[in-house]
Image (cartoon, rainbow, N blue to C red; front, side, top):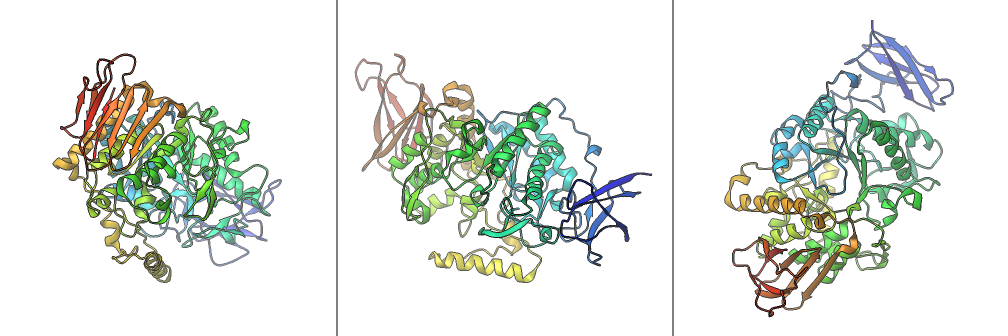
Length: 598
């Protein structure tokens, strides 16, 4: 007969029982581990449902470290034996982040089925596109069937409607079989409210700090040692037991930790140790609103030692240049000078005044020492699309403002041939026409109503006069599902081939993966004619962001006349006689076009 050992940290409880099959089993305090309780239950094993009862209560709570929640976030936990899964990726050693291209995916809307298995069936599309790393939005169990995943409440249990633990492992295994690494988005700054029972066990949260989304996680107050261990061990669990290759840590600026060793540094050190133990590349990526290069500064130099961080300033500068939008945080962007600074200095706000914030913001990146791949560049992502009132993608924004859709090709060229680690948002590669809205499935009627009404009020305060899709309406989620018939239509097929060509070129030219931030030069004209030339070694990306045609000089490189590698418009021409016999040339660009030359 099998026996399973149950453990739980409940420091405030005078007694704890584990409940299995209607029977209560008294747990004993663990010697040398204050607050920890344990019980060995004969007959329990893989698939056994269980819960914990504190201080003799008739209410049994799910396990804080529940590995499996087949009955939803309010149901009992279920034992999951990780050793039962038959992995086939024994020869997989990971993929280093430098030189990689990421693809952000939301499992629930990537396919009509919204499951891990259905997503795995589309992985060949990503391989053909030229993707190296798939980044999954959070999959930790959250309330209801569909949602973004940032209100997860069981951080150790993959969302059951997606396919649960086995489904997630099948997805990662299938990705590795195709040479794709997989990154998981994790949320350690807060937990969702619906189904969150951690406070009943111990001081997982603190009122010493606040977050915009819920109670702050306790990283530095009384009792925080075990909370920190909970987070660190959770991160290692995803990397070890689910074979993830990296983690993207959500909104680290909302993590409050004033201890001598920040939780991010502790995570970095622990993941480095696991990587050495497994003999596999593992990496950590942060999302941060701080513009602080300390996140990616090595631990030995006083930083946190993370491998990369998102670069919102690059997104804002490129988005504003393409769309002309200046509302909200875009008010500090839009000029080609800000785009040049983002491409060459990373942060536009590097200690400069932010009109949007009404104060100075950020600090400079040491461009002589910091590798470019430590910053992720993107033109779209789940936040920048989904946090708009109607969830419209950049193609819809261009159309509504009367701007030519060919600007998408210009934006893609600057992103995919630029200095940073590039990331695409699902469907971006073919200019998906489907929106990606904010959607939830809270089963608590009052919470659902509050979310819906709060969404409308938020955009009403910002002057939005159009319809704000109701997050609780199932149709809002359904409209956000990718339409996989689109890549076969002429316009979308052309844009898909453009992205494939750019990624193939990025892989074929060593200078396009040069780690030096100083290896990118930018010149521009921001007057009546709006043009920009980005030079990376022998490759030049010439962009006309305006309507009138422009003729731009293209100096020789290494004594050879330039040749056209890629052109977004058949009317683009290179004239190697325009400037005399010096080997230099000029390129003629119609409005809203881009040429890549070598």
